[in-house]
Image 1 (tube, each protein chain N blue to C red):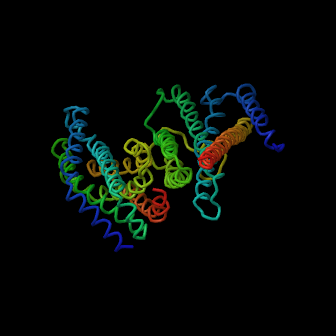
Image 2: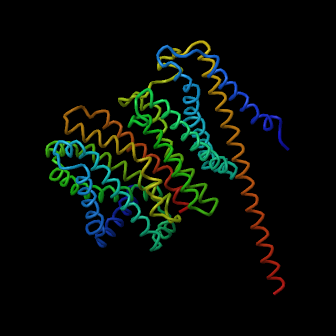
Amino acid sequence: MIRVALLVAGKDLRVELRSRVLLWQVLPFGVIALLLSGLAVGPRASVTRNAAPGLFFVVILLVALLMIGRSHSVESRSGTRSSIKMLGLDPAGVFLGKALALFVTLGAASLVLLGGVVVLMHAPFAATLHALGPIALALGSISAGGTVYGVLVGDAEGQATLLPVVALPPLAGILVAGEKAFAACITGTSLVRWVIFLAVGLIAYLAVGILLYGVAEESA
Amino acid sequence: MKTLFQRALGPFALVTLAATVWLGLWITPPDQRQGELVRLLYIHPALAWVALYVSFGVVVVASALYLWPRTRSMTLDRVVEAGLEVSVIFIGLTLVTGSIWGRPTWGVWWAWDARLTSTAVMGVLELGCIALRRANDDPQTRARRSAVLVLVSAVNVPIIHFSVQWWNTLHQGASVLTPTGKLNVHGSQLWTLLLSFFAFTLVYGWLLRSRYRLESDRSSRHDRQLQRAIAERQSEGSRA
């Protein structure tokens, strides 16, 4: 399973590296979304600092939707999905590989966006560094959950508009917990329960993905 | 042929609902703290009970049974289809009645409260399941995808249930029983509240059954049309 996961993750990351869609399309979109959010909140530093964790996670979810949609539409177009099915690869490994690749690309996007959050929204640098752990847990949950939702939507009619409707509501809990954990780092309050929540979310999504990805993929 | 239970379900649901209204509006006394506003609580918790636990529970069980190869059948998928739509209606009514209660109590129609927000998210999540079903034409694909999505979404139910304890919230705790199992409500108010739970569960059962029958009729009509089209093509082929 691990071997298949590394194989699939390597394939997805190579596609990303060669196409550079993350660099030239997704990241600029994320930065624009962050700038617009900052404009909407207003120029007061105290307000933007308080809103920064929430806005960061909203932008990350939007970026994740683009990445998930892209990953699955590329596979549907090029017939890769059928080829993977024909190879008889372990579905759990395929799920883990796709989730890992999504996690790596989202992690890269997050680092850039966190820079924006520190510079543009006045989030304290030390607190942002402190929040990297909970943010990584949240990104793991978003990647695992997003991979399952991505394959469920698959090549359905109106895939681009359907994916947000299907994926955003269940990921709202992760958004709230991630925002609370990041905000706790900024205010210096305890973030233990939010970290536990994020860890449980990650384990739940990984378990569901490993168990059900094959069933979902069967119909895709 | 309809069984007696099937015939009686609708009228019985209406009678219990009418009894709830009668007891709730005229027989039970006003509350010491909430006054006449307490009468809304004979509707709202029962609607929430059906919306969040009964109806979504039915959908989750039917989805799990559909995915289990030994119990897989399109009957279960029709239950999921019917259950999702009825559940969305009950979630909508829960939010509306909660909002009507919240305006005089909290001073606002809507608060970004943990339970309100997670219930609204639950409603949108079920709309997402319905949207996914509408986007897939093949019945088997539709059934499998929606069953997986429902099971993944079931993670949300414990979050809603415990949100009142986990987050700081305006919403009151459990209506009937405290977490230690002690009764919160007594006398005629308790009986009316319990009757309302029973009445709305019956209404749910009636609506589910009616929607299931519609879905069943639609499905068999679709099958008949398909058979007719195949027969027409075959006769065209034999003539040629």
